[in-house]
Image (cartoon, rainbow, N blue to C red; front, side, top):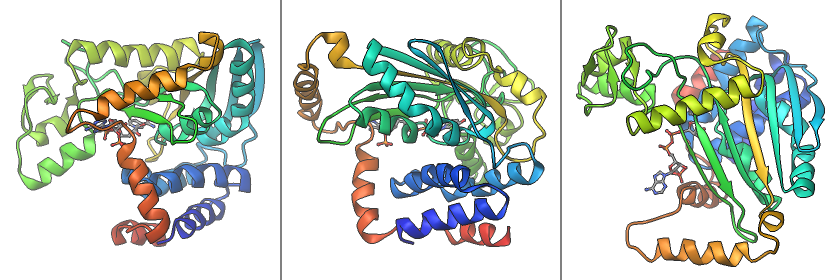
Length: 328
Ligand code: NDP
């Protein structure tokens, strides 16, 4: 499919289920970016989940997010039960302006439903010449280090660095050691998993993917990843005035789409922080040092090369996913 055909399929489907043009376009954009860059887990695959929340009424497809300046460098967006991309679109210009005025600015998002890949959100901020950070929680599926019961979401964190004239460097990763989908694939194929991926329903470590599916995942890097995941809960929950993952789960209707929760975003102007614009050459020299070593690449390089290919040749989309969308 061409990238534009993917966009119009996503937008048209969301509008069919009651989203207005603004909401449908914001979500279709992130779905399309994911397909275009080869991040299939956040592309059309997510469309049935987005539709489920519109059908159940959990998400308001006609929501009009409100943007409030809580302080000079704090731009709060209340999605009023919108999908997160709609709220982001509404608040992003004010976040960028505040960071370019104050050197650093934060954007707490509340009342949103997050189902997207975080890099799609940071890219436009980095393209405005800013470094950026984002994180969000979800529903519990990950244990705190040493614990036995899921408390954290898969809690992704993303950091982006602007590269004028080039695509920004963005890393974007869940703090869970592995996606549940990958555990499911191992179960289907009869493989065991390495130690440290998950626990069974009683909280005991296991390498059996079937038992992990009944239990919970672990964070990457043991107690270090656990602290990062806890940080995400604090920033996207207590800091912004929204739910922790366990609170979001408690009031979710389990319709297959994302629960209501929060997101924390931050933008930093390197020219103001450093006092001059030497940061770009300095950072590019550092990236060159990484590339000098065989076997390295920058996070995002895979996506950017997919983008060039898919923009030209189109994207191969799974027939199973297209059938699921048709069935809607
Ligand atoms: P991956 O483990 O696939 O990748 C994590 C990051 O590492 C990417 O930026 C990737 O860049 C980079 N990377 C991978 N291999 C290398 C390498 N060899 N050298 C340098 N960098 C590398 O991602 P996850 O499975 O952890 O997360 C996938 C997506 O899921 C994310 O976009 C995340 O935002 C999203 N997510 C969303 C949630 C939500 O609630 N909304 C919940 C959990 C996850 P590249 O892309 O170029 O490979």
